[in-house]
Image 1 (cartoon, rainbow, N blue to C red):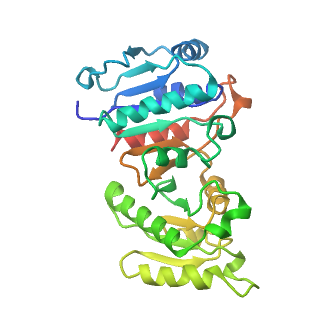
Image 2 (image 1 turned 30 degrees about the vertical axis):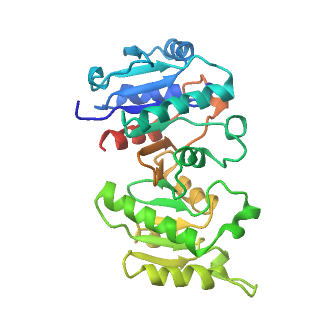
Length: 310
């Protein structure tokens, strides 16, 4: 087998994940083996609900032989504990054990309800997974081939953003993004960095755009194709954004709002800096749409294709 299997943690039992997974498999050719890590009863209920015909074989979680896993096939590993919070953590923990053993280097997770599932010390799944692998330097990339974005602060309440904006953190994100593009996508990206303040201006004595971001960009320009800071309200205009491959913003919605407006579901969330590739569809559980068979699978299709080619 030339291709490592793609591990898949579906996430919240009450979500649209299985709907979009079955849709994706029906219309997309994936060569890598797929291994769902989930509850058997839940899986069979969803197979029946969506009339999914393709065979899914069970693997014994106590004895998984990589040599016996075939390309283009779907498998599942049963996680029997269904107490919601514990169940999802158990799914992740088993997937992590396979990653740490070198069984695979690819994982997709479905949407998670952070308030219900994660310990309060984790702002999001990106932070949870990074912490589980003792990775302090990481970045969130919302990736589209035409344009991607990366927030310097991830899932942070707005009132806390300015406390976290510093030279070290911004530099870290720029370098991680640059290295990822060179290693996995084969080219040196054109990076734009936004300012923190509206129009990169401030009536306060200390202006982060002038004191922190501008000097850092000037320093990094010697080795990295980076420019900025740019006002966040104009960098996404057509003639501006076409000059760049990635826009790095200071906080979550500063760059995620525009990218989702531009591409809607046609983007994937990649966690950079991990010792493996972690990708997730760029949407939430969407509980209101569960069972209606109306959800758009394009983000999961993009996620599967991305990992299938790596």
